[in-house]
Length: 88
Length: 411
Image (cartoon, rainbow over all chains, first blue to last red; front, side):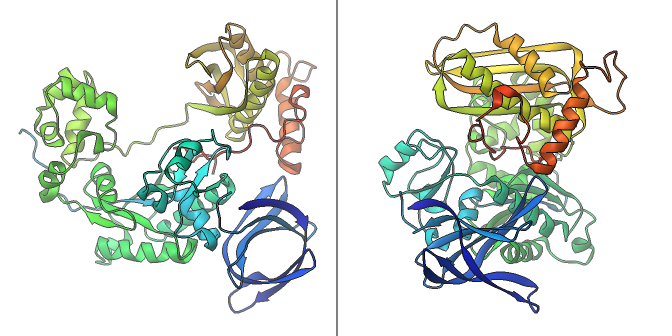
């Protein structure tokens, strides 16, 4: 089931100089930590002059999907959507 | 047969992303991979599936209402479209192809034609089939490991597209001049790109029932009897592998279609929807630096009726306000017979907006052009619909961004 969340969340992110990539590593949401797997799709879009970065990925155990947004103007992270891989 | 089959080397490649929107969603979310997935404009039971995954297609779920799809498979995963993500995929797809040649023509968000004549790859002696496999690998690297493409190679765009459809998903096929009879022998008329049911009926009336009949039909018959225009001659050439589809046409119109979510017959509600559609159309018109010389309005109703009207304008249309006033003049002609289900507006006969002809009212209160430019500047800076006309207030979630079919000029 897909669920809209739209809540600010805490994220640990790292930058790999070798891969030239910045990826979210750990998500804390509702007082629970989720180790994040590889980013499956990354894209950006503009909201006015603010660039929004979208990271779509799952937890390491592949039990839950997260769509995360990083607002580049204030560097706030928002968990937009989750999905358990099942139909609504 | 007067004109021989074109036996040039097949150097035209047609590439399309398999089940584009669905496969990009499956790439983004690994929990829904290898499952039946549908992308629908609205996720309510009456919403229409605009793309389905291969797993759903194998069950017979293609373009249909969600409630009908659930009759086939109740656990189908339905997702709303994510236009920005698909536009991003389109741009990445294009970037990969442009590494091979600059002759890359987008046909839609998920389809490209690549002309390899004179390309570096061909000059280096690379076979087009090897190049195709390399492109498949590059696309996986750029878009993700789950994404696959169909590749067709042929002497012209038409045959390359047929080749791309022969071995789905993740296929690659080549059609050469020598294969044409055999390939046409395996297809029905309706399988040919560009032949719809109306064209099929027209061909049947002329005694043409198969692609082989179509190929063998003399040119004068196609031109004078079947299509009654130059179109018949183009088909004569196209079927034989000659290129007739490479012309690029300039922009002639901008429009917006809307399938009404909360169906209504209230003229006030409809005029608010029209205003938002005019604003979206006006923004696109101005972004491409055009102005228009006419407007059209079409509406579909719950009882199956359809109404449409268009009108050329005496003055050039540029601002949303100009477009809206012209659309409302058309709207006043409708006697609304039932709830409105679809609205389509367009501005046509577009001409470049600059240099502008100085108007009598420029710089006065009646100068709508400067107002349009000023509000566009604000919306560019702070996001779409930051400044809107008063009757568009509280419409943020109505007529949201949708994926375009065909045109890629706004990507």
